[in-house]
Length: 282
Ligand code: AMP
Image (cartoon, rainbow, N blue to C red; front, side, top):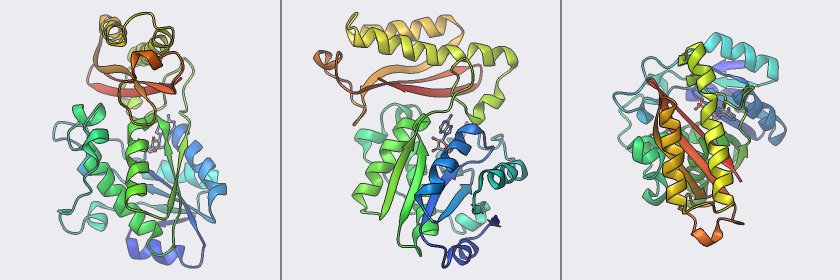
């Protein structure tokens, strides 16, 4: 396995290796990330994983400085799963000048849900992913990239970006890996105390209960969503949103479609200072 830090080193390592199957991450790898790498491997000739904590997608009060950076342990896991190239740029490698050109995503998709609570988040994500795509695929004629459904809205935003810029990249969505009890694996779970980790299982349960109530049309959707948030808040959470949306555009479904349409329940909530997200397709 090669570990490279700069774009020229990456391109040299990729030369003659064929089409990349790429997994972008912010590191501190867990079984969710490793599942993406496993899934990526057969999709290309050379598996590339990037590790980069992208300042552009954090708001000033968020956890950019404290985000766990564990490069050595990450590389050991990647080696074990058969990754070929780790691209771990420093900030000065990826952003040698201030990144004043940005990729501005469609506000209809990017200013709701996560984008509403984290303004500018998807601009930061799209900008870094476009740059990572240029680094990985710029000299290889395209390939595949795998993203987790854990970040459901991110997956949709990036699919639309690739479509609208006609990038020669196939985007693949991977299922969410969960711990026992249903908690979606996340690097941010490391911020939780043992007690909070137990409590955190309530988020996936709340989504499952909301999905079931919506499918059965137990009440108007807005009422079900408000009840779900109140129930989670009563268990010590501060909920940003718990909502049911249409899978393809993340807009609210017409009440008449609740029984049959492809839907997704999405949630974001804070336990203490840790903000977690999760979702459930149904
Ligand atoms: P991150 O390092 O948090 O930016 O995540 C990197 C990639 O891993 C993204 O595509 C995430 O959606 C994906 N990912 C993170 N957690 C999980 C999980 N529990 N299951 C599946 N994919 C995940």
